[in-house]
Length: 301
Image (cartoon, rainbow, N blue to C red; front, side, top):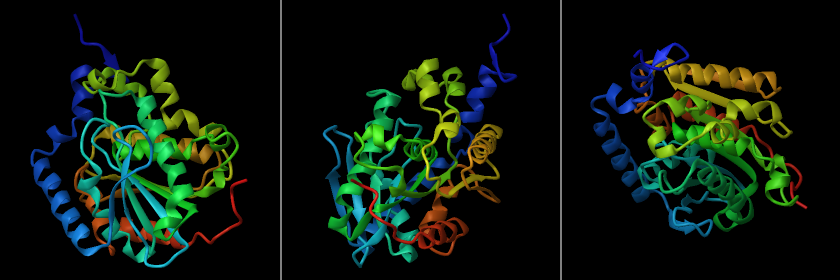
C-alpha cells in the first residue's frame, strides 16, 4: 500500500522536513551554547526570575528590567516544538536587545503533551496581558509591547498578535498595546503537523489546527496593524521557507506591514543566536523596530 501523502510529500518526507534535530546532527552543541550565553546574561544583567503570570504551573517568566522607567517591553517566547526547552535556555535574548533599552521578559508555558495547543496559546496571551498590567514594576511601559519568538515561539507570538483583545479581556484592553513582532523560524500553518510525528504529542485535530494557525487568522486580525518582521535560515527546510512565505502573503493581504528575511549561513538552531549579539542583523532590525515606536495615548479603559 502506498504511503499517505500531504502536499505531495510522503509521511517519511514530511517528518524529515520537520525533524530539525535530525537535520542538524550537532544540535546539542547549539543547545549547550544557549545555556552558556544565558548564564553569561544572568551574570551580567539584573534579572528577576520565576515570576508567576498566571495560576498554571508553567506560567512563569524571567524579567530583565530596563534601567529607566517608561521603557518599551519585549516578550520573548522560546521554541522546542511546544514540547521541550525552557525560558532559562534563552535569557541571552536580553543581551542582544540591550541597545533597545527595553524591559525584556522571557516566558515559559506548560508543555505538550501535558496540555493541548489551546492551553498553550491561552497562557501566552495571558502573559501579554500580565505584562500590560505589571511591567511598570520593572520599569516597563506595558502599553508598548513588542513580541518575539523562535520556532514554536514564532508560532505563539503570531497567535498573540492575532488575539481579539477586547474579547479576551472583556473589553478592558485594546489591540494598540502590541506594537510590533519579530518571529524567527516559525510554523504558522499547523494543519500539516497533523500528518507528522509531532502530532503524537500535540494531538491536533482539524479544528484545533485551524483555530491555532496564524495563516488562517491573519485576515481577521484586529486593527491597528503593527510592523511584523519574519526571518528564516537559508539552510532550513522547504517547509519552514513555505511557512514564512505563505504567512507573509497572508499578512500582506490583510494590510499588515510585513518584511521577511532569509538569513544566509543559518539553520534552525544557529539563527536564534543572532539575538545574543547586539550587532547582529536580527538584533539591529528588532532594536530599530522598538526604537521607532513612540509612546501613544493609554490603550485601556
